[in-house]
Structure formats: structure tokens, C-alpha cells
Amino acid sequence: MIFWLSYFIFNVIRWGSYFQDYWYSFKSNLVTFTMSMILVYVNIYILFPRFVLKKSYTKYLIGFLLALCIFYVVRTELIYWLINENVWPESDTPQKAYSFNHVLVVFLTGIYDVGLVTTIKLTADWIFERKRREQLQEVQLRTELNFLKTQIQPHFFFNTLNNLYALSIEKSDKAPEMILKLSEIMQYVLYDAKEPKISLLKEINYIHNYLELEELRFGNSVTYDLDIVGNIDDVYVPPLLFLPFIENCFKHGTKENDRMSVEINFEKMNEQLAFSVKNNFNKNSKTILNSKHGIGILNVQRRLKLLYDENYMLKTNIFEQEFNVNLKIPI
Image 1: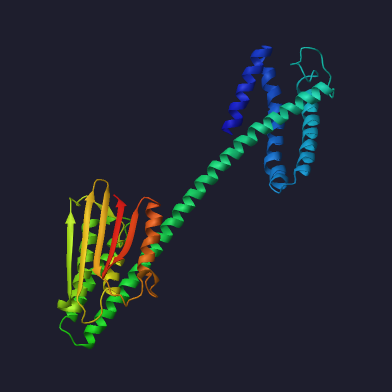
Image 2: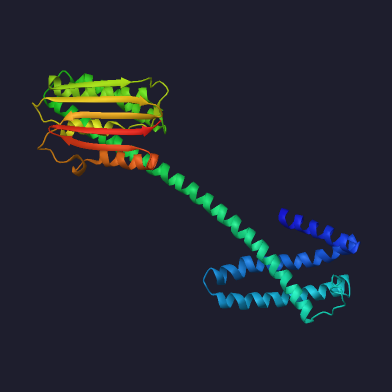
């Protein structure tokens, strides 16, 4: 409506100034604009979707020419009966209706209006569709990220409950303490981990609770070292991003009665956060990525791709009896 109203006022002023008769220009444009609008919308909502979008170009041309003919006849007759017997006062020389020149000019006027408005409509549709797809992609991204995050939670609790089950069989005095640690972790997972990003300090505290759970299970056979380099008070990260790497240290790095050591490091470097974890590696364990139940690392790799595209670095390698993970993400 804004477009047509602006276009109408512009033409009324233009031709009113040309003829020095604004009332005639208003009446004439009222007829011609009404007919142009009908032609435009017939093209946009009937001919275009029915033929062009289905690649029936010949049928479209025939239909458009027929619409132009109807447009010409109705437009000319309305001007003749309602406005002026001279249906083409703009011409420098007297012209009759249905003459070749008059038909050609009216056809070109109709084609110009159709071309202009159809271009605007298609451009607006393209912008709207692109925005809709971006919004849809964003929703899908959030949905997949939430799904991946919920995958990690039962994966973690499954492992922890197995640990608790082992202690309960042994009637260990450590079981109550483990239940307490597990409840703290559950509180973190159920509430804090719902946010898209959380404080790195909270994430590290969560990791520390997990390490204490493993220490309760394995006792003195487990040693760990957690170092933080740089001021991380203002660093926020996606929740549950680092734990799968640490879980795999215990899943693949040791067996009962083996010595297990884990070294974890967080370092803030300019606009990046560097995370590394190192553990002694059990050669008899399957490769982490190919483990039957090793959804954790694959999950994290997918999340990293969705969150950072190519703006992250993840390297894993085995050196002698040691498994190393190095991850860098932008802050």
C-alpha cells in the first residue's frame, strides 16, 4: 500500500505538472493505476507461480500476452468513457485508440509496471526467505546443541552410577560421600548447564567434583593435577564441554589396580582459552573415538563444529604410554 500510494502520488504530480491540470491527472491515474495493479497481481499471484515456477515458459508468455490485451482494452475503454475521449493526450500528435502506436505504448507501460513491481516482490520474498532460513537454522542449531548437551548428562550419570554401584557392592564407607558429590554435580547439570554459556570457574568446580568422585572410587591409585594460568574470572564457556575428555582418561586410561595420573590445564591466552589434558594410556583399551560407548568425544566434536565452525583447534595424540588432548577455543 505504501508503494502504490507513493507511486500514485508521484505520477499525479508528474502528469499534473505536465498538463497543468492536476484534477485530470488524478482521475486518469486513478484508472490506469487500478488497471496496472490488477495486471501486476495477476502476474505475481497467478501467472508466475502457475507457469514460471513450474518452468512452463511458453504458457506463461501466452497467458501474459492475453492479460496485456485485456489490460489494454479495459484501460482504454475506461479512460474513454470516464475521463476523456482523447485516450492518449500525452502524444505530441493526435492518436486513436487501438492504433499500433497506442497499443505498443500501453503494452510497454504495463510491462514496465509488472517488471518493476515483480522485481520488488521477488527481492522482498528473497530477503524474507533468507531471514526465515537463518532463523530456522538458528533454531535447529540450538535444538541440536541442546540435544547434544542432554546426551552428555545421562552419559556422565551412567558412568557415575556404575562407580557408586561398585562401591555399594564393596560396602565402602566412601559411598555416602560419593552420593553427596553426585548430588552437587546433579544440581550443576540440572540448573547451571541449561544456560548457553557459564562461568569457566563453575565448569572447573564441576570438573573438580568429578575428579573427587573418581578419586573416591579408585583411592590412592589415582592422582590428578589441575592448573589454571591467567585470570579466568571473566571467561564464559559452553557448559559440559571439557568433561568428556576427562571422563575418557578414566575410561580408557586405567584398569583396577593400575596407577592413574591425570594432568589438566586451563590457560587464558589473549582472546583464546587453551585446554589440555594428559593421562597415562592403557594400550589394551580401544581407541577412544572408536569405543562402542564413546559418544562423549564425538559429541564434543559436533558441538565444537556447531558453536565455532572452523574457529577452534582440537588435537589428540598418543605419545608412548600417554594420551594427550589439546583444545583451543575463542573467548
